[in-house]
View 1 (tube, helix red, strand yellow):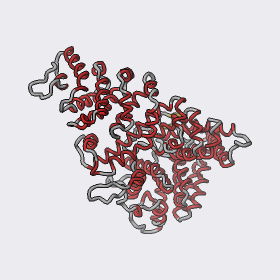
View 2 (tube, rainbow, N blue to C red; view 1 turned 90 degrees about the vertical axis):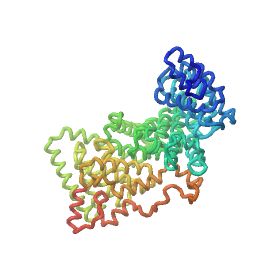
View 3 (cartoon, rainbow, N blue to C red; view 1 turned 135 degrees about the vertical axis):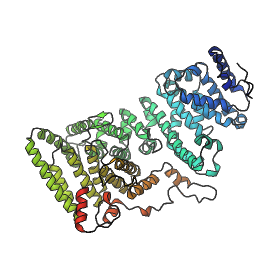
View 4 (cartoon, rainbow, N blue to C red; view 1 turned 45 degrees about the vertical axis):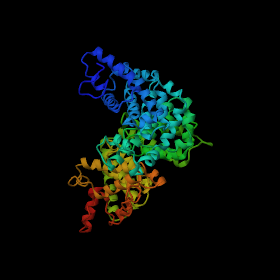
Amino acid sequence: MDKASPDCPYPGCFFCVMKEGNPSKRRTSVLKFFREFPSQDDDGQVLPISGLWNTAMAHPNDPEFIELGIFECMAALIWKGLKNRRWLSHDQNIYIPYYAAHIIGSYTMNIEEFAENAVHSDVIPPLVELLRGRLTWVEQRVAVRALGHLATYASTFPAIANHGEILELSIQLAMNSLEIVYSHFYQYVDRRLSYHCDLLTRGMGGIEMESRKAEEWASQLQCWSLQLINCFAFKPDFLSSICKPELLIKLPGMWGGLVNETSPAGIGLLRTICHHKLGRGPVASCPGIIEALCNIACSSDDWQYMAIDCLLWLLQDQTTCHKVIDKAVPALVDLAEISALGDHKKLGDSIVNVLQECIQSHGTGRNSLSSRTREQIEEILNSRQRLKWEKNMPKEDLHIKQAAALVVKLEGNSLFSSGNISGAVSKYSEALALCPMRSKKERVVLFSNRAQCHLLLQQPLAAISDATRALSLHNPVNRHAKSLWRRAQAYDMLGLAKESLLDAILFINECSHSTDPDLSLRQNRVPDYAERLVKKQMRAAWLFREAAIKYGGVHFEGGDGNIYGQETDDSEWETASESVVGNNGRDEMGNDGSEWKNEDERKDHYDNLL
């Protein structure tokens, strides 16, 4: 069955081999194909490789090709592409190293036995050469993917670790991957390699799709590099090589973006680092990282719990606690009412327990708590004590407290609608002091209302704090639409584009499911104010933004080299406070562009909203 069918022009054609009905003959022919294929120089070699790529993607757990030598074949093909540039440039052979590395990665991602076979087949050295950038970033992407899979398993990690350059190459790639893809592909549209374009779009798209896929692949290149580093970070011996300030400070800003949201990226690596004592010291010594962790912890990021874990571990470590406590406590206090976050059950209790340990372990002396930090911790501890007391109170007394809180809240609404924002803050605070701890829905509204007041008073940090408390109390967590929108605006005031963007997107999502007439999308149309903020933050959080600033804008024939996003005038966007104040104090949620007919209508609107 080594001969091709009469209609096939290729001797020993892989597709003809696979049609053999006799299993024994087919195995023999496939084995021979894998042994002989790397030494052949016929045209059309990319066809069987692309067929194997499809098979590996569809059936990565099928052992047949593993047993017949596919890893030796793929390693030999990569070496051939690296050593024989004349062969590589012939026909469509330029695609072959990419497909070969991808096939290795697909067959090693699920089964440890397959990974062991790959290591015994010496796939690591050619993959390392691709990782070095011997070809292009496209091959680096699939090489780091394959090496990351091999590093995942206990039995094959030592083989990866024996190649000392893999860790350093991965670190450099994680830090520079976005610049590499931007400057080598994205920026100069007319210079894009055709085989890159074909691989990105499978021959089905134009420039716009190429650019969109390049952004996705760049994110994957960075995230897969971080995943490979993460495998090393589990081993204490490698932490000193990983915990360099130039990498650590960048990790919070490395995220999968909207195109690769399933990857924990930089925060995932930081969590692994903070899990070990040797990693916590370097992290605690970088104040910028702690601030970034607090921002992620108080956001609607899918990996919010990882940032919370990092902060808790840093506080529990006596050698790092005093370095981070003043920054970490305010964020954790705001999160102390969370009941559960994903698989993290009773997360709020864990936070309170750690904060209580901080009070007990920091007495007087050099490492004593600041008065402000101590007050914040005592506030949340008193709230927990208050909750216990209320459980023993008669229901009638609780109803009285709740009614009193409602009266004070309405007084706050009245002050707010008349423009006395500071007075409204005081009333909402008074209402919170009266409102029973178990009345979570009412407390969510009070915190959210006070957050809106802080926005108008140009106090974004206070607005973030109150909005986060409201979102932590809400069931489900992080799903209170008005608080999401208010926190999105507050983060915008601070220039934190990613956090603002995530909240704004989640706000729109909540509006699409809301039955509240003030929030539900009219005719399934996203509100203009939300659309403007999302567009603004997508430009600011654009994956290639820093690279575009460094290397210049996108160039193409007849183009002017503008940086992405500058075609829209940012002056159209108003800050939260400007937008509201500019509309006579109207709350942003109900603004439909109409004029208020009278003062009573405006007050009725506030009462409905707040």
